[in-house]
Image (cartoon, rainbow, N blue to C red; front, side, top):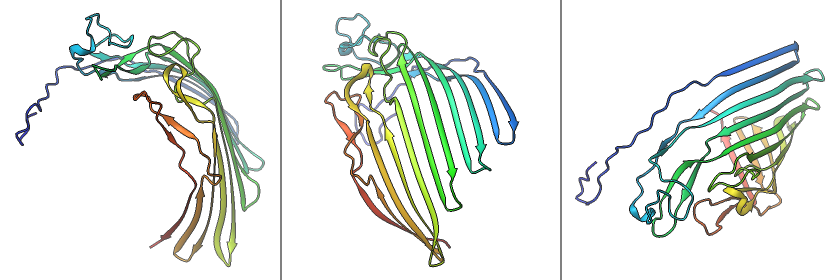
Length: 285
C-alpha cells in the first residue's frame, strides 16, 4: 500500500498467513414427558481460528533466545486455534398453570490452547498472542419467570461458575488460578407491575443485579474488580401515541470497579456509571 500524500514509510507487506482444518461435532438429546417439561443433554466441540502475530524487531529479543524479552512467551509467527469440549444437562419447565417458567442448566467446558496476549516493556513495547495452558469451567445457571397476578411479574436468576486453569502455563498462571473476568457468582432479580392510570396503560419496574468479584489479569493479579450490586428503577405511561418513561439507573449510586486494564501496567480501571436519572419520550406513528 503506498501513500498518495507523499508521507514516507507507509508500506505494508503481508507475507504471513494461517490456515487450519478439522471437524467440530455436536450431539443433542431431548425428552419431553409432558407439555410443560423438556429435559436435554448436549455434547459439542468448538474452536476459534488462530491468527498471525506481527513480526518482532530485534529489540524484543536482545539475547536472541527466541523468547519475548521480559516474558516467558516464545516468539512465533502466529498462534493456533483454541478448542473447547462442552457438556450440558438442562431442563425447561412450565408450572402452576403456565404462570411459572424455570430454565436450568449444569455445564462443563474444557478449554485447550488459551490465546493469551503477552506484552513486553522497554525497549520493545510490543506484544504477541500465544497458546498457553488448559482450563475448565463448571457451573450452574437458573432463570425463573413468575406471573404472580395478571399485573405482577417477578424474574429471578443466578449463576455459579468455577472457571480455573487445569495446567500450569508460563505467563498465565498455575493450575487452580481462576480465569480472568469470571466472577464466581451472579444474581439478578426483577419486578414489573402493570396497571391503568386514568385509562392509560402504565407500569413501574425495578431490577437488581449482583456481580461477584473477579480479576481481569491472568494469575489473579492486578486490581480486583466486581463485587457490586446495581439497582435500576423505571416507570412509564402510554398517552395515546406518546410513550413517556422516567428511569433511574444505579439508584444507590454504587461506586465499584467493573474492569481493570490488562495491558497498561498502572492499575487503571473503569468504574460503574454513577446514578443516572433520565426521561424518554417516544411517539408512535
